[in-house]
Amino acid sequence: MTQVPLRPSVAALPPYVPGARTQVGAAAFKLSSNENPFPPLASVVSAIADGAMDVNRYPDMHATELAEAIGAHLGVNPAGVVTGNGSVAVLAHVLAAVCDAGDEVVFPWRSFEAYPIAAGVAGAHGVRVPLTADSRLDLPAMAAAVTDRTRVLLLCTPNNPTGPAVRADELAQLLAVVPRNVLVILDEAYVEFVRDPQAADGLAVFAQHPNVVLLRTFSKAYGLAGLRVGYAVARPRLAAGIRAVSTPFGVSHLAQLAALASLRAADELMIRVQAVVDERSRMLAGLRGQGWRVPESEGNFVWLPLGDRAVAFAEQSARAGVLVRPFAGDGVRVSVGEREATDLLLEVAQAFTR
Ligand SMILES: *Cc1c(COP(=O)(O)O)cnc(C)c1O
Image 1: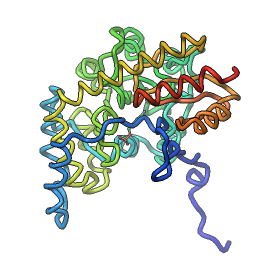
Image 2: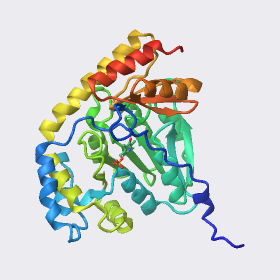
Image 3: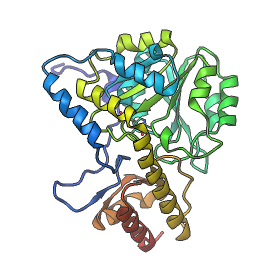
Image 4: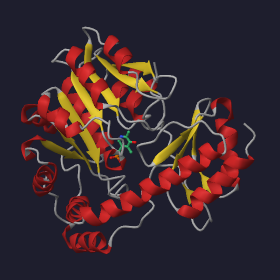
């Protein structure tokens, strides 16, 4: 034994593969990371610039002002709002607060690639429940996967990377059968882009069920992916537990100021969200018009179930100047961004032999 051993669960973790990045100066559209295509608002940039003079100080550890602003914005108790360095970090903290070694975390698959990593890091056993044939979360199968060891059920709605949102009726049925000591996390990273009237209303569900936690982020609709701010909405007792395991000072002062400025500019930002939703409709209609079978999307991305052709499609698309995200053997996720990017993507899709 001459080497420091890694924890076996860490050695077994799958890598998080980030979306392809453009070379500096390269002419390519980056539709590979579900980012917001719009640059930050001037009011947000100036809030960040103002904060630059204070970076010799630690930030407000619990982002009190931001938690209060989020509470007011959503109509929830700010004592239940826990911020973190992106909602991916908040998810890790939620799992750390409730999971012991060997506990089970049930999540859909294919879904957000951070889930198996987060479960593994928490020392929990990740249980993957396959999606339905039409790329939706299979809620009855997820409910059936719950055992005595299950501590957490993790739902991604809308599901990244496939697009559909969980419906209110199916979620109500799930919550009626899941034991009340099992935490149900609704990862609503894309909630602002949802337009399906049948989609579950996370806040209403949270109000009714003490075992529900919402995860939200400023990375997508609010366009602050580079500053890393996300949060959980939980009952205050759970929130206190999540705070207890959180990285101290996890949200920088600049990120707190930018998130506050973004909430103040929410109306303006939601106009941009609507533009992305409109562009999503155009991309979906264009693809379907070409004969592609693509699931409905409630996020800022569209899923092409290409199976073994996924990587080949991504390569062809990159050659045309559009970076997309392939999941080898499964499909390609295309983020919705600039209009010209949609046009190029549709040209690639038209020419691609399926
Ligand atoms: C992008 C995304 C997040 C948010 O990540 P941040 O860490 O807040 O940037 C969370 N969940 C899902 C499903 C996502 O796609």
